[in-house]
Length: 136
Image (cartoon, rainbow, N blue to C red):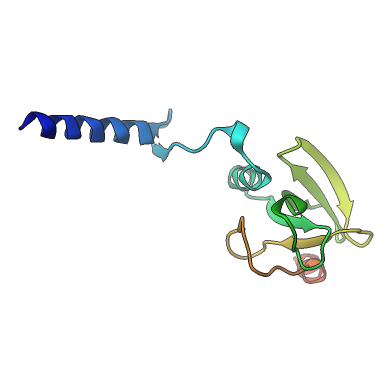
């Protein structure tokens, strides 16, 4: 190999080692951003992956879920009763119960598909969620 080829090979190997890490179980995983840079979306997705009985819900004071990104908030939920969900907010490190019949905000429950960090259109689906949850 020519010296420049050796340098390129070394740099590529170093980048691959840096980009992937091996966890204690021996599985290869891609290194993600450090938790101090996580947003509410990152906390919610991570929590739902590690706790599959919890879902993800987007909360907004705006019926059309419009406005700056900081206006909307993504948290986890678990059904407690026919009209109450327990909210887990990983960003703020709190949990609380929320009665969905006495609410002041709008909720989009991500019951199908992967929650999105960005969207063009969301709608409040609380009524549909409560009807479906009541049948389970």
